[in-house]
Amino acid sequence: MIRIDKERCIGCGECVDVCPQTTRTDFPVYAVGEDRTPVVANPESCIGCLSCQAQCRAEAVTVSGTSAPLDALRGRAAKKAAALY
Image 1 (cartoon, helix red, strand yellow):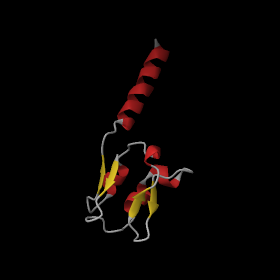
Image 2: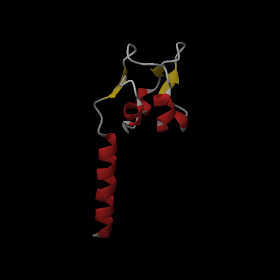
Image 3: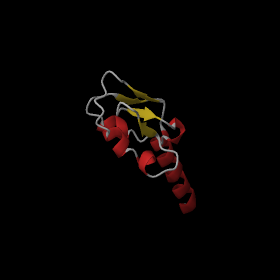
Image 4: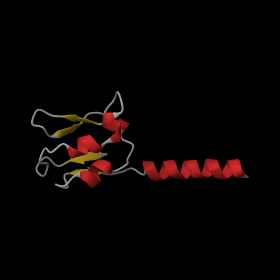
């Protein structure tokens, strides 16, 4: 789940710019609202990389309830190990 604290957000757009699922997909995670603050448009597109949260200098973005990157790495490691043996 992605949460944007509108009280803290300064509208810099860095979270939108850094999100790999906003710049390279037909279903972007973020859109820019009328007040220039980010809006979570397609949360199901989020891969849980936490780039937006790390990039937010106002600490307005929180991503929770995801272990997607870690799960993906574990899955790849298991497939490689199975292929070796």
